[in-house]
Image (tube, rainbow, N blue to C red; front, side):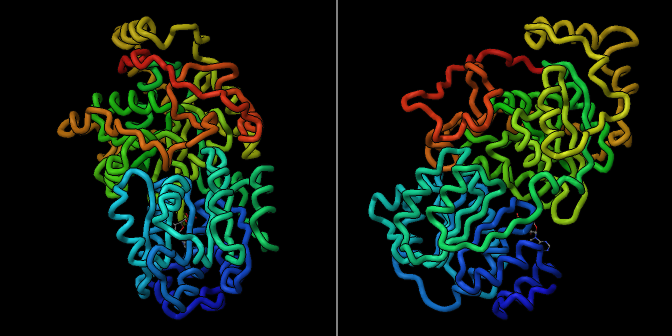
Length: 500
Ligand code: AMP
């Protein structure tokens, strides 16, 4: 199969060739002719499958006829996060080099004024997060009645972030006759209901299920106690990583993202940070620094990093094992992209074993412990072990003659991490203090952050309430949320801030 057989315009084909793509991915091969034929498409696919080009390329072909009018965009793409929206904009820039399409980004965290000016000029493509889009529409600054193609991307992510009521409202604001392209990695009942309500006789295209993308990624587990010992384990992993270029490091909680980031910097690592409370400028700067190699490590939360397409990530390190198995698949999918291989290692404490079992069930395979690693060597965790007392105990172990971290690192270093670390991964004393302050105090309240039903978000610092992270997914779906039950954020910011 070649791109030239799919019915794309000459201009688009030239741009594809310039991108260096030789053959369409399965979702592209199946979806592009259907989109060009004007059919609604239900694509069950996630990032990494080439789905962005599956809608971008035929949209560009279709947009060659006609012109946009002021305030009335011709096509609308909804994305759950600002980063994903920016990524789709980049795709239009890449594949639209031969076109004169006016692409406008409507996301939170940037000024209304600039966006309004661009919309006034007429947008061929409007890429938006739901909150900011509705703001514009409600203020009468945007008319959705000219929309010819509506793309709803990462629908299950929208569900997790509580955006489904917004999506329903937006679907009612665009003309009934528009073409709808709907993408979701998974199809929980709420998403199925949405597709039944808003898609007209769609072509269903299903490619590589979430669990099957992990074959290009070598996965491993490393045992660790929690608290400062865990940060020490992480440092050992980074220093010992073979074929290391860079790493995305995931924490389950925003608070821990900030702590770990600071700790890595304190230990001389060249690390950036990305989480949902950072303002747009800080998020973009962090991502750009990582993409360009300015920093080798980026400490992230799930919310900030999910779906990001950074083509060349050698390692994903789960500082925390994710408590939702699907997040594991999304996290490790940040490496091993675009035909490359990758390494994903998770640091496992005794309390994480049940999550590992759930992950193994989802991906239908066992994840091996790396050489010398096993939880049986670890003492059972006791309450308060990760607090100051635990820290003191760790320190004294570390400094004990002939023992401590060095001995441990040399005996239990896993084979994948046995080679000397790349220079890039080594601590860089000259950058040690850079960005020491956790950036991005200003939380973007609307876009890129959940508006309601926030339970699935792990970016809060709340104490564990009820079942905490053990709440099954079906209980977290919006339909089951009792009105008036707020997810409070009463965490104690002073707790657990000691750096190892
Ligand atoms: P996506 O699933 O849209 O996030 O795309 C994942 C990655 O695959 C991106 O880095 C794209 O640039 C790349 N990609 C998309 N289509 C192709 C293709 N036909 N051949 C090779 N790489 C592609």
